Image (cartoon, rainbow, N blue to C red; front, side, top):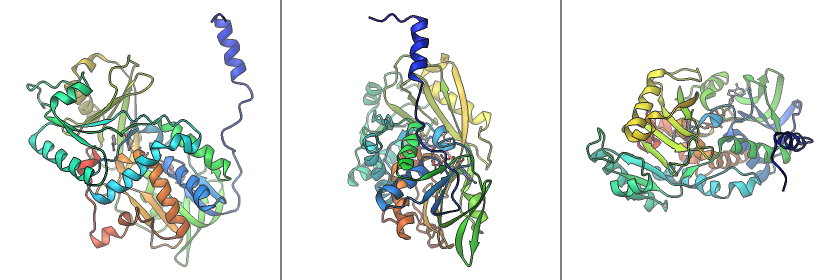
Length: 416
Ligand code: FAD
Ligand code: PYC
């Protein structure tokens, strides 16, 4: 048997890192494309993949001002679930969850989807009534869900303080067994590699600075690398959607706010499910590396700084210590923020706009990671056919004129 000396390690490290092929090309922009997708996060890359794979549209570019997956996709706490209250949202998120279940095979890339179950804790009688209502609604929509007692919660996550004398005692929880987490970067990389292989151009470090509109129709995008003509422009730029809309003379009902998270030093396995609590306000899981991945609420005001305010973070840490007294001595390694785009009803906007050939997919707020595959699938269909996919139709921009809002603040799970 080979001896694992430092020399061996170095030799293997060198030999195994030679002749790696890049996972995708780094092409020069073409002068014109059939579709330009603005935003190289998970949603934009998934849209490109499904456009090419399902609709045969391969003359497509993804234009990304930074690096692929460097926005909210690479900054989120990776919780995946579909336990939304309203029928429209439940169907959309459940469609996405079904895609997650086969995504590693679909992309031939391990996205590390881990259906370890999601607990949403209840700390008051009203919380429990809401939980029961949501679980019943989920089951009527064919979505897995159970209401758990405090003892059942304790059995799933023994480190939670379920004492009745806690300041916010755990009275129960909703439990979605098929929910879980996935590796965020891998999702972006998997879609990027698969889209590139189908001919999509991935243009990194290329910022869209204007959208050219003539005669009420989108004609292309002005970028930091020059003008790119396009028959269709599809914006999937999360926190920056209102800025892009303004370039085309549109106003979106969106607020962009920082949302932050942090990760601890690695620990031995101690939490094998996802725990969310709206009342004390935190959400937590343990990564495969062992870090505790912890999320906070949004800042209460709009902003584009990718960091978030200290008092919001402090509040989340207080909540973690309250729920998991054993974690109070764990050291934190890193903190970061993203910019989320929040609609008044905590639901996304997916569809056409008053500008012909211009489409928006945005407003996923604090909860869009879980929808990445579904969002890309329905948005690609919408862009390819110039009409909303049936699952996307209720999420059209027009709902802010008609009043057909879909209130999902309760299921959003993060304080806005
Ligand atoms: P992004 O990944 O942000 O991609 C948009 C891209 O557009 C960015 O890369 C950006 O650089 C690019 N862009 C912007 N403007 C321009 C321009 N002018 N030109 C070119 N490119 C541009 N969701 C969940 O479901 N579960 C969670 O646990 C969860 N936790 C979260 C925790 C935190 C701390 C944060 C910040 C978010 C969390 N979310 C979660 C929300 C989730 O991350 C987002 O809804 C989702 O990732 C949005 O994906 P996207 O591809 O639309 O956006
Ligand atoms: O939507 O499940 C969610 C979520 C968890 C943390 C941030 N968003």
